[in-house]
View (cartoon, rainbow over the protein chains, first blue to last red):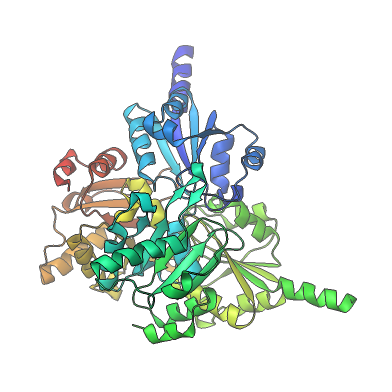
Length: 277
Length: 277
């Protein structure tokens, strides 16, 4: 009887909880996410799929009252998250992930592997750049089409341009996440992203992006001082967005209220009123 | 000098902060969201744009240590949020919003009006159903096209069907939010939503939805026991999803890992492996 009880106890503890850290700093986590961390036997954190510019590991450990082990891309991907899975085989493990967890494919792979090993998994959601950007710009969320990441020049891809072309033809907004390399402290800037798109335009000539195209640059979403600037591409190329991370939105057809929101929240030139659908 | 200082102090306090409550219950709010509420002169909450089924106002007021005034759709829309704007004209007002704020158009209108009156506005983000659903199903976020709300039968619209048709033709996933009327405690169910789409299909005959179409129903995202079930429409029609709120995803072309995720996280039949892109 005693043996049966203790076995059941051990079984109940084998779990892996993915907890979203939300945006910007250590206070982006939800109250339930913090509770999950406080009751974990082991806490891991990955900090390479998104940048949280003001996150302090020391302050976060103070909030939780426990040590947090930072795991690298090598540990989560090349080594298939072995360190995390081993801890979850022994008790309750929490993996902290910037934004909303499971947006990145790498975490879906880890969750699949955990379930395959009989480890129960759960998700505690966090604020994501995906919904934050629409709200910050005042653009209607349901009018966004497919989103895309613009990679660094050395990983050049035409995909972002083609996604933008498709969304534009449908009158939809496009969210472009700009590439990051947290380990090398490198972040694709709004200017670099625009230059990549203009270069593809010069070859493809589909009329998707030019100096006269309206776009919105967003920096440090989730902080108390995000920079949100809507303007024509030729102007945005020289706009100072301050520190990373960055995203870029290409509006499709604008509703009257969206144009007003861009003028008020994103300092768009009043000429955007001419672009109404 | 003393007068100048006190005037400056008053000016600094005129602000309206939109704070996302995240999902499901009172612990979905972020630590920074809770801090904003604690330092507010007046706290309002709207609870009609989304349902948070386990939210306890009493527990939340206990966490904040202050009274929260619940505002109705009538107060925020018909009366243009007068009660909130008046409080923000006198000091720091916080408006609590389920999910991530400013996803609903009504809050964008309120934010525009506040800025027009010289009231500073800020946003503290929260977890949103928009990113949560992708993560819960294990579908790639960047493969979602335009999203749509399926309204109650009496507000019948062909739009959801047309959005679905467009996304399908592009191989993209579609997130359908199902209509709610919190004041009347009414929630469009997965079955009702599917029946509405099948009825439009019977008229339009574009081959968008049939009993053999794969879909994923999600109930109570953000709770510790969400129901996530992927199956063919004819089976989902009779599946018991438990309590609200509900959403529905129609997958487009599936990547290998997405199919495995649907089988593991959403109990999809293994036949989905035949649907790989």
